[in-house]
Length: 328
Image 1 (cartoon, rainbow, N blue to C red):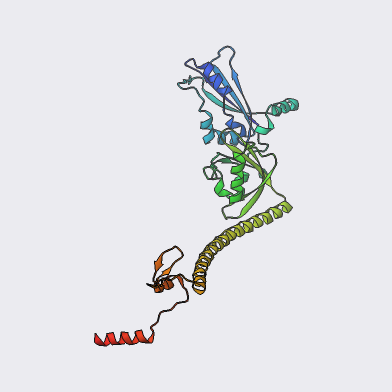
Image 2 (tube, helix red, strand yellow):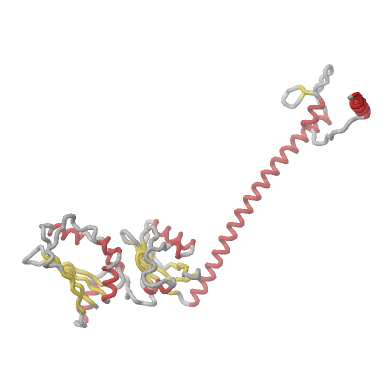
């Protein structure tokens, strides 16, 4: 374990504002890999001198946090116009030697388990990933990077939703939008590596003010087989749903066409039945009365309302047509 002590002196009388900023800190560092805890000390004789103590599992974890994007975000609460005395500003790193086991135990009990990932930054068994609510990956430990076949730091800036199966990405988004966002139990989540192979982890979701954390571990071989089978079934179900939607659409279109054809058939049948039964016809001009109370010629009526008529010429009309053509 290492101890990092940052010392600075407020130069322009904003000591009270700095104290309040530490009290209102956003706790972004709490979930950083390798972070163990922190204390802020104020000099009793010179109250403008501050000492910030942070404890880490190793120096690499501290440097990764200190050079990362969340370190800058965590300092947004610094009072505007703050000026520091450069003669007092210093950052020193100390190795902590093994001491009283009881004191070390008390030190660890200060930190709430809910806010402290219980693994080291370099672990290969537990997977840790921090992301913003829009899915942007902020940081991930080496175990997660190895799982997704990425080099160190390459996951930062990528979209988490693009590195998960579509169903599981939607499940995580639904969890984040629920009233109780923190997952009560583990969730089997499927991630996609660079070869487009699916990797399954048993994960817990913890939500913070401005981001959320995934903590996962590999599933056992039996669980892995079940997860693979579940994923295949889910993919088959999604395919069947899409095919069923296409079939329903085609069936609906066919039914609409059949309804139109049936309506036309019923109308033609009504007119044919009227012709077979009784058709009102004027005894003087020969016009017939239609269903909407209009009067029109028999020929026009039959042309418009009968499906059983075909064109042709009677012998008399044929002779007349030939005679007219001969005159032309």
